[in-house]
Image 1 (cartoon, one colour):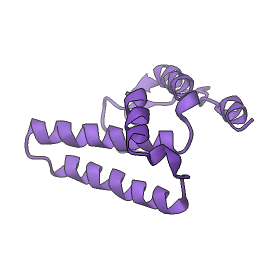
Image 2 (tube, helix red, strand yellow):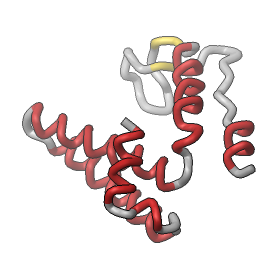
Image 3 (cartoon, rainbow, N blue to C red):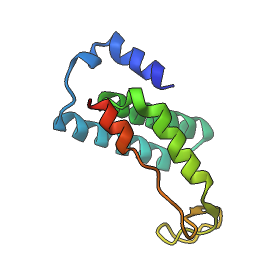
Image 4 (cartoon, helix red, strand yellow):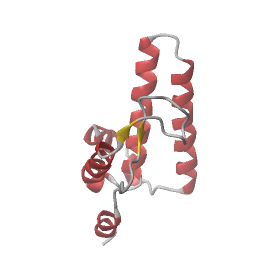
Length: 120
């Protein structure tokens, strides 16, 4: 999916413009707009469209920030850490029973090496 976003950015020349604080603000507004569309969706087609648009903007933002070369490894690390969690209510988000919670001794993924190599 990320490669398709990279290609779209190339097609429209978006990859030729430096990422700026203004673009970050714009992309945050877009992400919030798509999330709001999901909240207000009235049928599965609207929900699907909103979720896809949310992913497109999220991946597009990752690409625009230069994270494409490290994305797959960072994602793998997050998923590995998530799979080391336990099913149960996460008190930060309420009491939904099928959330994931951090067990005793859980470790968050580290990205320091990826980010260091990215900027080298």
